[in-house]
Length: 188
Image (cartoon, rainbow, N blue to C red; front, side, top):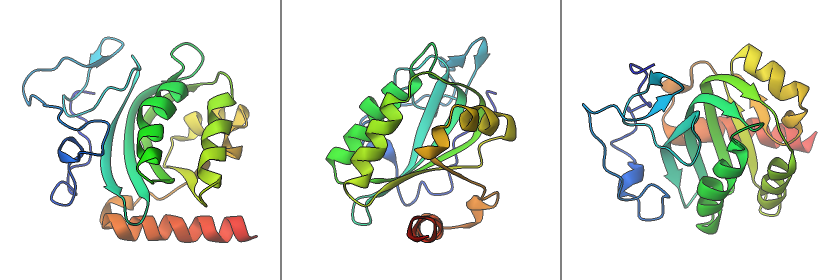
């Protein structure tokens, strides 16, 4: 797992630790010192922690004019024990919503397990974004993780879509693709 880096090809466009509105503004990273771990597996030091012991993230892009953010996730999404959704909502999503962002793209291809808990924070997050014509989309969640997510009926709050080639897009084009899919889904 220590070889899996956050997607870095958009760093010439956006760097979360340099964005004064980002919850990760001012963070410093080591390229050589591995301090973060998921269970006993070290992960790359470029990932950001937000209060979970098993789930980490990287804000790949925040666009305050278009009101969207793209966040890559890695690890185990555990609402049952760690209440990861509470931490994600309170420490990350709420901060971006306070800055006017209400469209969330979560890239979850490296989320290897999901354990459900209460739905309250999912409901709250969806209500918050719906008040501003926003949405929450999760891209490329692995099949087994999707199964557990759907079994808990959380796909009512977070739309699950497949876009295996998301890396070929520039951030704005990926956003427009996802926004188009959401507009068609919500209008039908």
